[in-house]
Image (cartoon, rainbow, N blue to C red; front, side, top):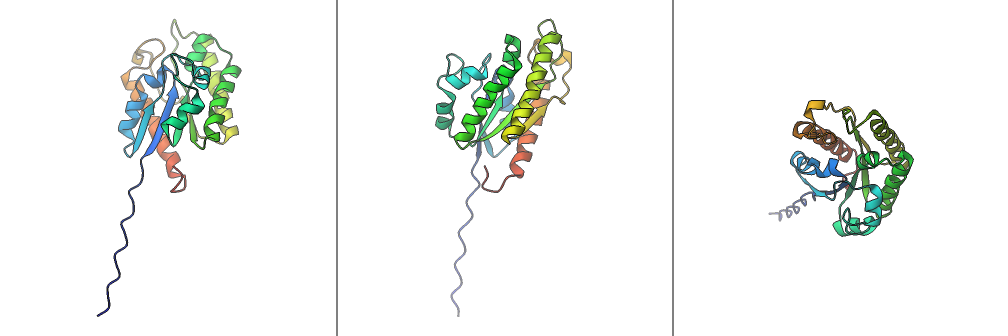
Length: 204
C-alpha cells in the first residue's frame, strides 16, 4: 500500500497591514479609530496632532512631533504612511505652494524609506466666521496642489471633497461633527481597501 503523501503545511495567515496616519486635528479628531473599525485585518496608528503643519512633522518640532519624520516612520514600522495636512496651514495663512512643498518632502522621505504612501485631500468645509471665502480658497488650492504632487510621485490620492458636509453637521467652525467624520472615514477606508486590492499579494 503506497505511503500517503504528507499534507502540505497550512498557508500562513496574512499579516495585518499597518497604517500610520500623520496629520492635524482633522485626523486626530476621530478619523483613525473610525478607520480601524471599518478596516478589519489592519492596524491604524494615530500619529496626528492638532494644529500641526507638515513642516513641524518633518523636523520633529515639539509639541507637534517628538522626533523627525524620517526617524518616526522607522520606529513605527508601518507599511503605509497616510498624510492628511493642509487645514492648519490654510488657517495659519501659509502659502499653498509652501504647504504643498512641505507635503512633498514628507512623501519623498517616506518613499525613500521603502514605505507606501497615500495622500488625503481637503474636505468640503462650509463657510463660517472662521472659515472665510479667502481661507476656503487657500484650502482648496492646497488640495489641487496635493493632487498634482501625488500624481507626480505616483502615489494614491484620496479625494474626500465629494463627501457632503452640511453646516449644521460641523462640531465647530473647522471640524466636522461625528456623523460627517464617519462619512469621511468610510470614504477613506473604502479607497484604501481599493488601493490594497490593486496591489500584488506581497505589496502591503
